Image (cartoon, rainbow, N blue to C red; front, side, top):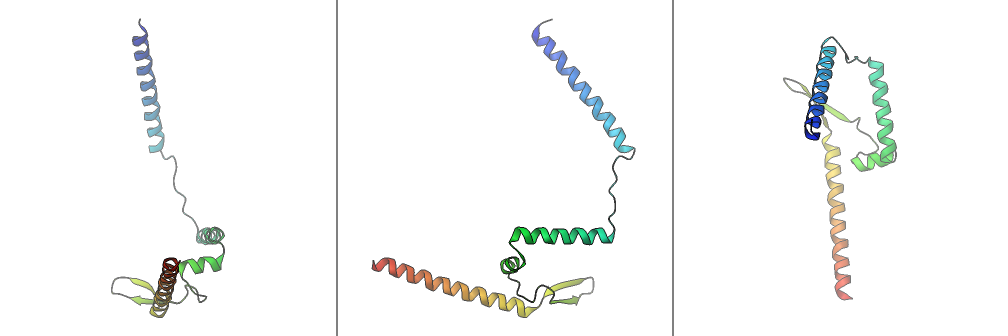
Length: 125
């Protein structure tokens, strides 16, 4: 038997062995291998709190996260609930949204003025 023939034979044996293992594995799964466990409400609340702490730690603390998200000191608790015919929709209060847009506009205007001043200074030098 040549080297090529022996390699071909070994390859076929390996493929058939893996296929037989895969078939056995499929049969075990069909018999009821892993089943997702339903969490209790306490576990869900605990997971949510742990995730919140994780996000706050990664974001630099609550104040920094509020600053990044544009949420004021009042927090996200000021939510108005409107009921539609089919479902409930949570929407932030319009005053907060308008306030956020005003702040962005003021910042944008200030940055434009600062950029224009820097450009003028550069050209004068």
